[in-house]
Length: 350
Image 1 (cartoon, rainbow, N blue to C red):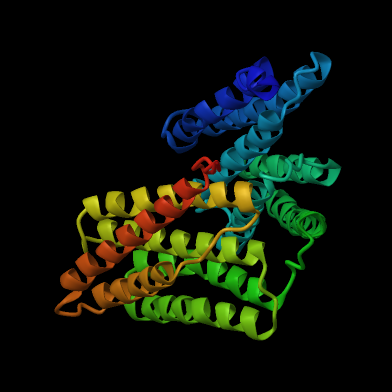
Image 2 (cartoon, rainbow, N blue to C red; image 1 turned 30 degrees about the vertical axis):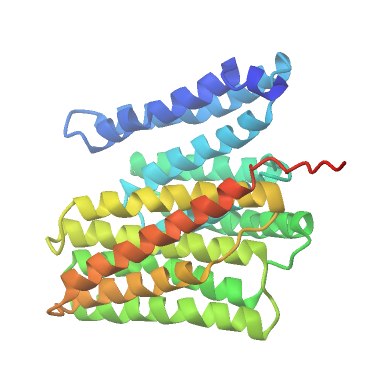
């Protein structure tokens, strides 16, 4: 109850306002109007500086909360990611992929450890955000040293990410810096390259990259069992990567006219349901199960996407069969999660 008291406190309202104003920043960044770069840079600066404001208010009025410690860095990551995505024509792709991939991984980590505790941003993380902010403003204003600032931001981003991984590893009592998780990360890092190849109509190369992503999905699972390096983080990160690949691939398939829009909606719903179901398991049992039907649904989804890209004659039938399996998997997780909340039976005797 005490935590709920501060959910809509002034600091959290500022964080929510920062998120709500991100589309305004993007509008001026893309707008073809006089001095749009200066306006967008000003809005970005104000939104970034408000990060310090909500922290100052939280400390001054003693309104610090777990929700605020989680919401504040998420607002930062959304703002930074939006700026990088819509500045893709001015920033090298590898820099964008590196920063966004790191931020996504750390965000997922925060949700994984959420049942145990919230890990607030440390000084290095705050310095990382300041460096990213300065670099992005320099890019928006086309300053001559913007590339060097972005390179510095990438280096600090990677270093702070490694420090955070070590901290989380100690908290979870798991060794998360291992070969299976590295394979999963490389699979995740190939996703932007697949998207770029698809958008540039390089279908053959896109198919090769997607095949590598699909094959390494099995390799990281096999390697984790053979090397006895199975971790809760690894399982969650693997699942997150699978769903990221599927959703991005389906968005591309829709945008390029391979399938209809409603297939994305059919995919997003079970993704959200299973995500929150696994959060329940992490909270109640400190681990999330991986069911056989879930493994089948993942394999079928990879096969379905490849069949669509290759123009296989029966790809529509495979697509329908895959979604039937996905929804069965979702129902299985819902059923298992609901059992965690059933009251224990009390047996009486005479």
